[in-house]
Length: 324
Ligand SMILES: [Zn+2]
Image (cartoon, rainbow, N blue to C red):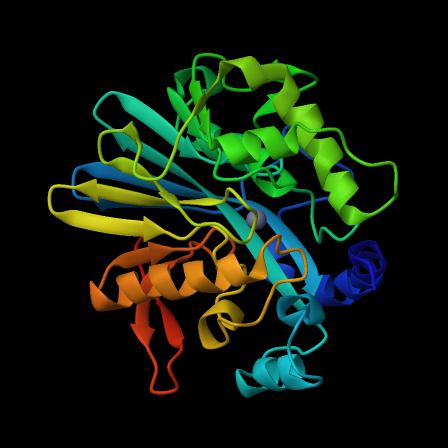
């Protein structure tokens, strides 16, 4: 089954879910164009040492739960969601962007959906810009943009109609990701090629200005890129460290807060390298648990900040914490 096939099904499911979640969608109307002047939905602010973090809720999808366990035994994905009292057919997935203010730097960790629209979005997405506006930060104020990987929901807001959305910012990405997502998409109508066409559209206009980062490189002092391959081949996580405090941003190491943690061996349907993704989950979740680090997940329920611990079954438990 192709992801596009699943997505069409999910679009139908999305209508039903929207009814079940009025509090989340109350402030939105479908008439507005995504990525334009949408209202802000939610933001949270907290600190890591001397760093000021603002988490901005950018997007909301509905995803068929089957995609979370592409290699899982028949029925086991439904059973896991049922165990946690969650709907078994589809899951709501948010996406939140971190703005990190440290010293004179204003650093964005990814850029949300921008003006990209998908059929399975529950509401119009690309709310990063409304969130920035709400805290008095203009796109021109952003000094650094770190693109953790090339998926559309992370690079959608980096350019619009070929122009950079953050014109004064230095942009950073891994070499592998930049090369892959600016390579020519194939002609077959599948989801990977659709994602590649978004990559070309959003990244080619700034390709020559993007600075390459590798494992352990700092974007600015205290914001460090961490190799986290698997979800995509050059996917990166981020360590924030200031004044003795740390937060490990897992980005898309696990897209669902229950699945990747409880069942780290289960592959996400769009994962480029499942074996590497498993190794990354075990390495980063284990580090977070053993060092009792604050963690964040780009797609974890807003604001997506919590702690990781090890379970007796040899897996992991994500526990959200209140930060704002
Ligand atoms: Zn993502």
